[in-house]
Amino acid sequence: MIPINYVVISFDGDYAILRDENNNENRVAIALLPDGIRVGTKLLFECFEYSIVE
Image: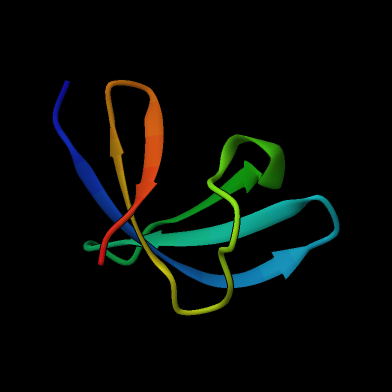
């Protein structure tokens, strides 16, 4: 699976709105994301898991 980089751009209830490098938006349940995310957090999606990019 190809890794995808995202940035958290906003929150909508129980969902985070993520934007990838091609400006595509994706709604993801906050429960699937690592603890401590906030607007501007960079994430890596790889092997069906999200991790924070330092």
